[in-house]
Image (cartoon, rainbow, N blue to C red; front, side, top):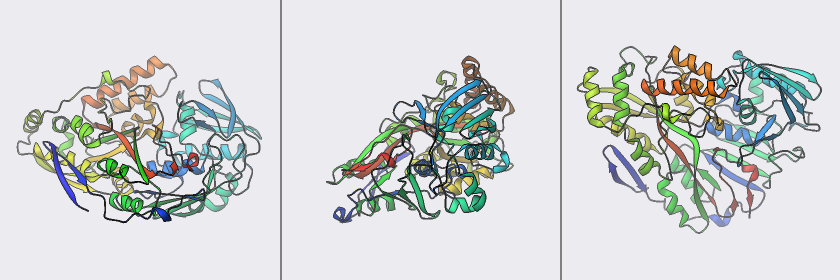
Length: 513
């Protein structure tokens, strides 16, 4: 693969990558309703979406599990799914009427026991779900009839239905209790439009259309009978697989390739901004060890001034990428850009701050990232090195980087967060600043503000608390929002596929022309 470099500014370089010299074999591709083949670059350690925090895991789960409610991908309106109706009894009590006639993939009947079992299990801290903040607002669920359930909340949670729609698939109680969590991960059962037929967490997940999907289900009956999702190690392999005709769909390829792919007769590439935010997290609390320079506020501020985020968004990410002022996606409730303390690109100021902090000659530090394409991480590395921060880039697979982050080992950590597509900052701020595995600030005042914003239905109180939290995050330079993501999709021209801004590819809506 030939690689040429072009300079986009100090510290920032992008690559122009020639397409591999592979004779396309589209004649042998799956151009019928029988199979859709997709690939991802990050294998998930557990296909059960409760036990991985990766976007790929959420996508895989979305094809096979349904929740009580569903969020329409175009209007973001909450619509019925496993529940046909719901009502607020008070600010912390939610009643559901469940749908009759729903079957799990193993043929067993869906009912209230399954809902109560699932919600009570994932709300229990002992279950060790991957993202506890998604379920920490739940107190308990109780069965009030064969097809009725009452959910008690620990506190008012305005975004409750969003969480129930996007990250709360329902397990079959009797089956999961019988096989156990490990057995369930190897042979999962849900109620979604596809059923999982094979799982190899290192290489693939295979699906088959579930012809017993309930009438009136919001996802509908898939037009394509089988779905194969494979995992490959890198972007080059992913693109090679598409060009060789071994797969039909990829995403998040290097945007430099978009025009090249669109010149090919049987492929197309499109772009769509998503709710995902690229970030650089700094270990302000010193979790990664004594002597970590990131515990010094002036060092953290120097990092913010060192990186030209506007250039990265406009010239490297492209496609309409933006630099969010606040650590959240602009459309989310509570994402107050006006509350954010702003840092301009100012390498002179960065070097001055480093000198004031006692590092006139800079320092060495590890920069851990799972971000692909690689040059996105290298751009941040180059900007840091230009002001004397000699960052050693350690590029890992997603799961490995997350594991190291949770162990508190990373002084500088570059990644991305899609909020599970929940359009509320309660899906953003608590994960990164609420005291959990991903929190490298460990700021009690910040935690108090986030708790205050998440404990009431009063929008004014929520907005005020979240604005104060955003000001503190940016004032203390804990966590730098780098850019919004713009997903680049490439797939067969014979495939009807629609991308949505919530970053959830819906393969059950795809079809072959």
